[in-house]
Length: 205
Image 1 (cartoon, rainbow, N blue to C red):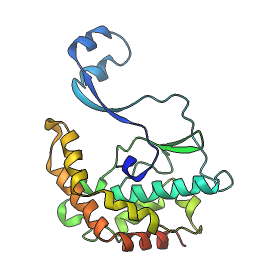
Image 2 (cartoon, helix red, strand yellow; image 1 turned 45 degrees about the vertical axis):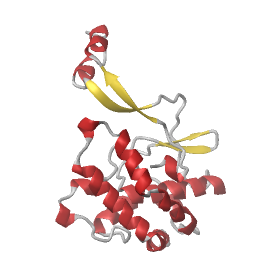
Image 3 (cartoon, helix red, strand yellow; image 1 turned 120 degrees about the horizontal axis):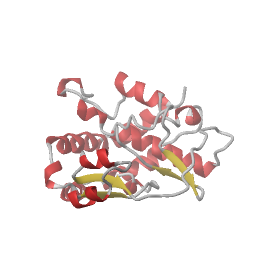
């Protein structure tokens, strides 16, 4: 989904851990984790040289601010609580912000149905707690944050996208969560202009 929004990100891959492979690392570091992970696993292509970056205005050029703004919007879209003060999950590579590790994405899917925000394009108290701890929140606050052009890209999450996305998910991983995620994102797409306005407002203070 990040790639669909032209966000630089580490390429995801499926990793098949076989019993034959596990035997080759018997007694070595990682053996226990490998035994517990037999079968298909979600992973990422290895990228060397990733460095933690300071989220300070003095460090960021206008282009980097634009990239940070796009990542902020993306995380609000997918309910990603995994890019906060304690864990940036973003690196700088060749003047590009590289996003990775979205383990806590779609946090809304973990809530009981009655506890989910019925209007996800308008942040509620649960969303506010998440965005206030976002890695780029303090960096972007008070800036001229306009999201209309970025949010226009949300139309890429159409029915064809979801068909392709579901086809890529292994059969054993198929669950009702996919439908919950699709509905959440589709609701925001339908109200993308209001979503853009809300993002501007929460960063205006």
